[in-house]
Length: 67
Image 1 (spheres, one colour):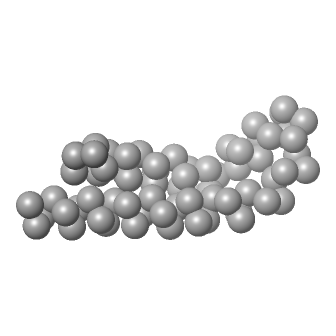
Image 2: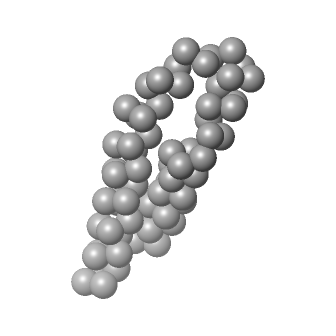
């Protein structure tokens, strides 16, 4: 992947994951779909995903500066 694609993926993933972490969007959607039992596990998935996307963004920015 090129640096621009990595950077776009990192920023987009960070924004979407942060939106789902800090607002009740997924809780509302899962409740409407009848999957409210899953909402207890969202933090287990979303927080590591947020960390991974932030690290990907930092990596892409670092690669962009060194290239």
